[in-house]
Image (tube, helix red, strand yellow):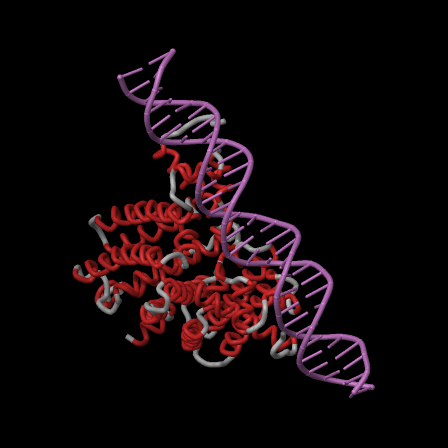
Length: 206
Length: 206
DNA sequence: CATAAAAGTGAAAGTGAATTCACATACACT
DNA sequence: AGTGTATGTGAATTCACTTTCACTTTTATG
């Protein structure tokens, strides 16, 4: 006997929230229809009113995450100001995001996604690329403004940023939130920044 | 009718090899008894002559991997010579190892492991720690020898190295080996190295 | 060459999860 | 109030595994 009925739009959001929460807590292996529905307060078969199957549910979650992830970065990337500072802002913002939504890196890099369909792998890779592209653009502009050394490969900088953030997420997951390597990551990023600064600037400053 | 019979020790190795190969190709989600046994050339139930259950099989694989991973690094870490060069050797060695054995990072960071039993998570984390400890020690010795800046947090350097290597592995997995970010990783590492060098050294050189 | 232990086999039981379907009911709209 | 539709339910189905077990067959060894 149905207690309450909800508009499918809202219910979908609830279902995606529940799924992300499960991934955050226990990994995608623990995502199953009964656990999702239990959290939402409906019965497993009711899920199929809102999603064709589990695959489509995961796809929807990935799509929603994509929007949130890229929306955030594009706001900062578009800002004016010192490029090195902006890079650091993005770096810190995403460390924060990982802390708040531990399910996101887990979703993005989970095997469920990595070894889903061809399409899904592509979508995932396109998210990663779009993300890196934003970072590269900042580096390139910084180089035009003569603030960042021409020696720096924009893609390498983007790669480094993503790597550090991601590894914080992985270790957070691995240790169940016990060990937070964000300080190490920040410290590592500062080393990177040293490498960014233009030689001429250094000489002028010293 | 059994075609050939093998000593359990050899058969175990075969089984572990097959399992690692499956993980490399398709991720741990695709590890199942029939696929493993198919590759080895036996029947699923025969696996139980060699391992109590699937859990124990994965544990054994993890244990074997641990040995190989740490054995390699300790060889280099123990060597004499310029600490910055040694760090780079370790970095490059592990990029190579990932290329040769794409299953290893996948195993180490797969959810199957991360969300296995408490013990398994601990074992995994202890591998990571042992790995990082080796790197930290090199940095610390480098600082004593006045070759690496005291500003560098040893753990941050270890974290950075692991992050870069790991992300190469992840993207390799994600793109099915199509995209190899090792060059970006190497380039990023060079930026790090700039941060390592002692200020005094820089001033002397300039 | 006899034989016991180790390794392998195939069938079947047990499990848990995804999905389907016929049926029930809350809600919006008239 | 009456009605159609979207949402929810619970039982049943299907499926892919894992694991057990009684039975073979190989192989090493005395």
